Image (cartoon, rainbow, N blue to C red):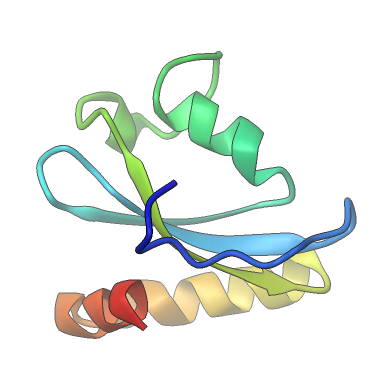
Length: 94
């Protein structure tokens, strides 16, 4: 993780919405309940990860936020995915 990364302590029941910066400078938004494992998947260290990130490695975590359940995380992910890139970039530097 870098200085740009925002994280907070999470319990095993928490869900995170996260943004990755891919090697081609695109942003990828997703959700998970195990962020360290998901990052390893996106970077090809373990099986899994999104097809989108497979050809855009390495991916770096630039933002995450916690949600109490999967439903709320999915709603927030959808909201962020609809935003223009400039608004997503604002999350990365806040």
